[in-house]
Image 1 (cartoon, rainbow, N blue to C red):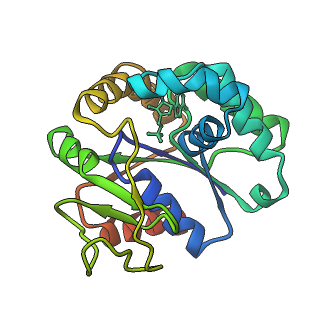
Image 2: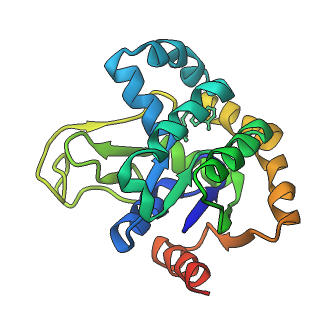
Length: 215
Ligand code: AMP
């Protein structure tokens, strides 16, 4: 099964993708994670992408589609892929169709996480993760049980994404509205879109997505 999780920054795509990975034999293909890894490693792609990401703008279609193509060729994605943060433009949507058909694969669903944009800014700006195990926290909604100590692994180091500040989040939302939301009608015409209330609590969103995949 191959599915796309679609929604603006902070809609919960990453959280729900991680949940699906834990429950099913699927891999999470997050272009954001791949790009952050490239920036950290200082690869040519990372050097090109860094400033664009910090500004909240979109990295070129060619770069992200190449990253997805490479990842689809790794054996672990054969059981199914969850596209998280890709495609983000019409050109990427067409590239993905091609990448899948070349591998005799096809999309099963496009799950749109519907959210209230005003609430998203607060969600995104307050979020941070454990630097060691990646567990997610939030300044208001989910503090560690012991201040400064990760509930899961006990680490005392945490990190925040440099693009999770109010100004950049606004640009990322504008990019979503202008370039990503317009790809929904393409998938709607193919009968692939399923809508989920992304403002519900994490477990309810997860249950709704599972219901769609099992239908
Ligand atoms: P994300 O982790 O999905 O929020 O992505 C973080 C940043 O990486 C975005 O704001 C973009 O600058 C870049 N990025 C991630 N995925 C894509 C994509 N599919 N197309 C273009 N840029 C992307």
